[in-house]
Image (cartoon, rainbow, N blue to C red; front, top):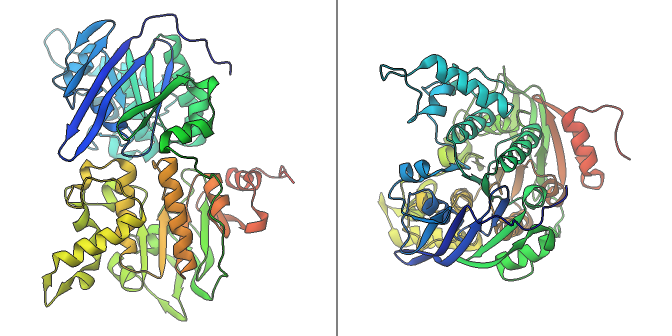
Length: 508
């Protein structure tokens, strides 16, 4: 797709020398960005670089300590998110905030539902307009359906429809493809093109460089709260963006495997669930990284949750070492040396209202307490040990997890389970939402753990990660294991063919 020339139109939105300071942290330092009508500006940077803070300033959640915002040449002050929305700024966030007990239509129009002449909600009009918005983005769901009955991907599409229900001139997309399938991502790209044609100015935040180079016209790079580079996307490269992001060149090659695999420490035979997966069998060896690949809905996360005791399988057996065991709860799994880092870190992985140190130390009280009393010094030492190894970016260990970026929240969850010193760790999308520099740190740490004899099960939807990190890969489709590949058999084509169920079209 040809990239347009620099816009000759004035900027729709200008942020001029914006600064924002929190206790102990300067989140933004005199940054300036312009968004142009009909163009996509990609905002890139490592976790903690200031991207989320900028979005919150733009949407009225935070007010800048210095600088100003201009919308169509007029200086604006957003005292609240309502002010920003009324001014024509809307945001589609990575972590959707929706209401399970309301219908899809109610979620889309909450706060601005159409009214009849008596001032009451016009349900017929609301459902009709909701259906039109959903059809526009390719979501084949009934507007009257309760949100709780939808999967993650469809909930994300509802959040997109809600953002589009406001006639905005500026659209912010914060990791909008995080929970979408390949087909839904393509549909989102088409939607972005429609928004550009309609003259919307779009700020697109993503860690995925293929997305950035696919749809962006411009780029702005943040590092440590400062703007360190900007320009037209067709005049840069992924390597240049990475160097700007991290201040150094990052080797894109995954860390090599230097250890030999040890003995078998886990065996799964015929694991089945009435609705999620069927007849799954595999083995796991000490020091091995076993990858699970598949498309959205393949049943990978559901399988991992059953192994960890979140749900109960209807058939099959699990063996750890030479002993067949039954895991009835996550507590049983942890006691057996099996831990699970979930994909949904916000709901299942971390207690966001507690500080980092408490989150990391919580499953390891036996290490940090004596005679029934918690030793705070031990808690801090444990948390410091694992958060440093994962290169966590935070003001202090007593900072609440809710104040961290999504990628750093993920690191807290990984650190929490690694601190229990497990035998087997399941990592479900371990680098989802994590920037390229942090991904390298997590990958290096995974390889280090494997070299120390820990066995790793890694669920990932990113083919480069699967191929670069896994010693062996199992592909799942529609709840069944449809392929197993040794390291020397791995290729993007082979994985996609197996995951998509394409027969007789393997690329040699």
